[in-house]
Amino acid sequence: MKTWVFAIFICLSSFGWTQKNTRILFILDASNSMNVDWNNNQTRMVAAKEVLIQEVEKLRGVPNLEIALRVYGHQTPVTNTYQDCNDTKLEVPFGPNTIDAIKSKVKAIQAKGSTPIARSLEAAAGDFPDTLARNFIILITDGLESCDNDPCIIARKLKEKGVKVTPFVIGLGMDLSYLEKFKCIGQFSEAETKDAFKSVLGNVINKALVNTTVQINLNDVSKN
Image (cartoon, rainbow, N blue to C red; front, top):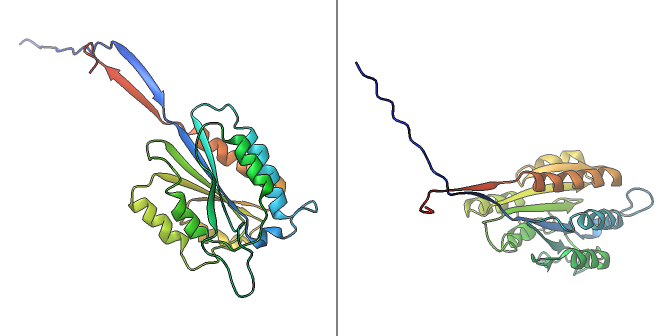
């Protein structure tokens, strides 16, 4: 009895790969509570700005990367009778060579307002040009939602709409009991000190950059 062996050969006229672009949107909390003294005679706001500027500078020249900046709580002062829950703004949109613009904007920011996390996340979905890239949000905050929306609901709605965004939340000097509140948004890291914040922010950025998705193109002799 004969045994037939069939061999299939694939001829590759080209074997190429392209790396997806990566976009990182930094959302910075500039609410009034960021004016609280933290470490080394600095407020949370001053420390956060200093570390963010340093880490953003390290991204200069990284290929296939675009970064942007959204800030909340920096436009309208909060009072005992009023808080502006629409106080969130995309200060530096995605584009090439945005590092200098982000550093300049961060230096000028003054913490003064409320904490509209949910509305900032909802607005952030429109900050990304498309869902083709690897899109990340890094939220830097020292507190919980102070307005009338639920960040968990917004995060779920974004997922249901197919908005492909991976959020990272970094809490500055927060009560650890708050941690559960942020798990519904994304991966949470707590920073009790300025040095811890610098380490956590660097690790989160590296995680966004290292987890690379590669597209492999296999073409036959007809380039199909």
